[in-house]
Image (cartoon, rainbow, N blue to C red):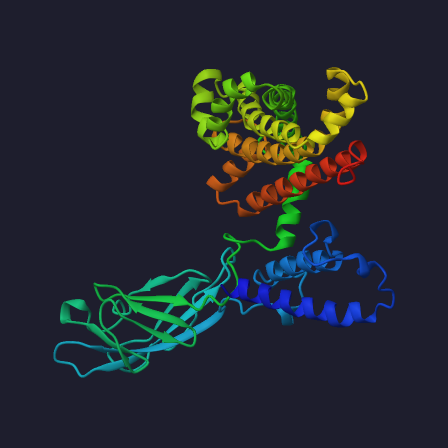
Length: 421
């Protein structure tokens, strides 16, 4: 919630800065005169907003992971590291309550540490020492070195002067001191706001991992091979889905019989998530490449069929009547009227289908694969290699975004008349 609130604050501040500072400084308002409120075609992405948004995400990522790429004054409060102390009050049968100090050395996990050295003190309750890793917690048996143990009714009754009983806890400036149901103390150092590397590593750690896997490989395959196999499966599955789905959509848009015959099938399969088909595809085709391509084919088929059908249905009837009046044949109407006017819808469907296929192949590789981006993420998660998991997620997002950009470029080049006719 803290990260989300900061991100919203950055968005609001950036909006007003750009709106009232950057845009006010501009002297040419000619382009703004064509913008009409509510005109979707006039709304274009603000590149400044895009850059600030991406930089804000990486800034928050670095600030809440203690990244060296972010200035130290922007770091969120980190976990406590150092020597923490607290005082406990103990009582025993026939003895007056006595105080002792516990010194806990909190260290960064993965580094070697020695126990702190302290004077045991003069009372029957002796001072204690222990070590605990940052973001961790540890039980502290304070009665082990006291003159009177649990057999003599040793019980801790207060921490830093605050009463405590089993199941309760006391917060100190170094962290939380709790008591288990059996009366054992548990010390949990203050965690701060930063994320532990096992949950969210710093950006530079992920970048280092990218270099390692790119040069050394992962599970007997290089990074390019993992990504290449995933991309190959997506392209092949999408191509087959388009080759079948587009003609099917045209047929459904032009023929009542085809529409009536296939409409129940298409509308039944359309809401079924491709992931729900994975068990069935594995039963039918196994866990090899054929099964994955069949799954991607099914993921793209219904989307492309609906897109082509919508494209045909959206052709203005006035254009068809005009072509007939000029003596055009059905083939010429199909070639020069229906196909050009339906291509924008088909390209929109293709962009959606490619995105669905890319997400589906990763999920399919999570279930059964020897290579691929999804397989890499799944294996890494089993060994808590969060940097590899994040690396895979980022690369999947970048490649998916790149595919969408290529589809937009292809649409712009092949359908230049979109929005003009």
